[in-house]
Image 1 (cartoon, rainbow, N blue to C red):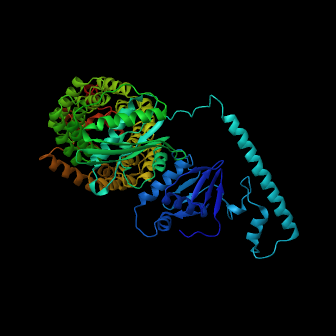
Image 2: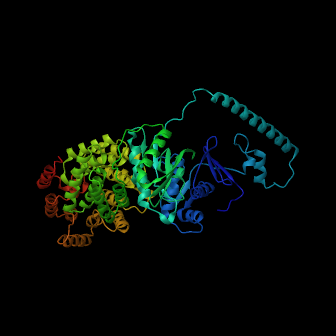
Image 3: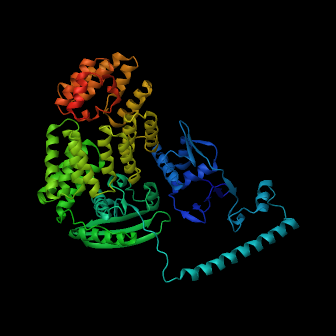
Length: 630
C-alpha cells in the first residue's frame, strides 16, 4: 500500500504508526499484527466514518492476488478482538449489511513522530503549517519562541521520565517483587514442519492433540482450547500472538516437528499474546520412540511457565506404533466429513490391535461409528455401542469415553436421564472441555430444558469462541426456546465470520419459517445445499409448501419417497413434508415409522416448532409419551 504524507493516526487510546507499521495502545504497549491485518486496519482508519465496500477493501489489501472473502472476514474478526469488542458489539468496526465496513471512532491525524510532543500530543504550530501549506516559509519570531518553549517542555518531560524511571528501578529491587498473575488460557497450535517437503500433518496435529490432552489435566486452573478450535491454524508463516488473540487466549504454544529415520526433532515456544513476549522455549532431538518423554518435558516446562499444577495423568498408551496409528485416525476425524470418518476407522482398529488396552482408540472408534450411525446405519450404531463399552471397561476415568456414551444414549437409546448422567460425569472429569458442555447443551435443549441449555452452550462458547458448529447450535437452541429473532442474529454473526460454513444456513431456514419469511427460508436452504451438497432438513421444500408452491414441494416429497424404497431416508424428514402439505395422517404415520426404525432425528420431536399443529393429536401425544419426553 502506498503511504501518503500523514503517518500517525490516533483514536480512543490506540495509535497507528503507518511508517513503522505499528499499532500501540495506552502508554505505548505494542500490539503485534500480521502484515495483512495491519493493512486492513490502516485502510479503514484512513477512511474513518465512511462505508468501505468489501471488494474495494480486498483490492486494496491484496493488490497482487485474488483471495476469498473469508480472508477479509478473518482480518476484521482479529481487529475486533484486538479492540476488545464482544460479539455483536461493533464499537470500532460496524458491518454495513450488503456493503462493507465502517470505522466508527473519530480519528486524529498527526504528521509524523517529529510532530508529537512528549505526552503524545501534536504540536500546534507544526500542524498549522501543514494545514496551511506554508511548510516552505521561514518561521516567525513567535514560532521560534514556541519552538524553544516546546523544546524546554520536551527536555523537562524527558528528565521527569528518567527520574521516575530511576525511582522505579530502586523500588522494583524489593526482595519480594510482585509476581506476574498466572495465565489462565492457552492454545496449542498444530506443530509445523522443519522441511516442508517432508510434511506429516498427522504427526503435526497429533503432537498438539497430545499436549492439549496433557495440559487439560490442569482441571479448572487453565482453559486449553480443544483440537476443533486450533486445527485450521496450521499455516507455516502465521504469527502466533495474532492467532492467540483470535482464539481469545492469553498464551500460545507453537513449535516445529520433523522425523528423520528413527529420530524426531521438536522445538517449542510459549508466547504471551498480549505483547508477543516469549515465556519459554526448548528444543528436543530424540529417538522417535521417546516422543512421550518429549511431550512430558514440554508439558512440565509450560506448566512451570504458566504457574499452574497438573493432575497426574498416565500416558493413554506406551506403544509408539499404536499412538502413531491413533494420530492418523484423529487427523481424519478432525476434517469432519463422512468420508474422513470412514477413513479414520481402520487406523483406530489397527491401534487397538497393537494395544488392546488403548481406551482413547476405542473412543475414537465409537465417535466415528456414532457419526455414521446418524445416517441410519444400524450396523454402525451397534459397533459404536460396543466400542464405548470397551473404552469404559479399560478406563472409567476417561472423559471422552463418558461423553461418547452420552451421545449414544441420547441419539440412539433415547434414555435422557442416563445420557445426562454420562454427560455430567464427562464434565466432572474435564470441566473445561468445550465440546462436553456443547454436547450436554444439546441433551438439555431437546428435552425442553431451554434455560439450562443456553447456559451450557454459553459456557461452551466461552471456552472455545471460534467453534462454528457450537455457535450455530446456539442459534438452534434459541430457536427451539421460541426466540427466533435472537437465533437469526446469532446465526448472522457466525456466517459473517465464516460465510462458507453450511450449518448456519440450515438453522436460519427453520427460523425464517417460524417468522413466515418463506422466500428467505428457501434461499437459506438453497445456500445450505450449495455449500454442503445435501439438506439435513428439507426446509426449502417445507417453505415452498407453506408459501403456496405445493407442486414443487410435492415433487420433492415424491423424490424422497422413491429413494426410500432403495436406501435409508429419514422418516422424520418425510413426515415434515407431509405435515407441510397438511396431510396429518401420513405425517403421523411416518413419525411412527421413525420411532419404530429408531431414526435419530426423532430426538427433535418435542422441541421442533413445525410440529405445533399436531401436539393435540392423540397419536402424536402417544409418541411423545413413548419417547419419555413428557
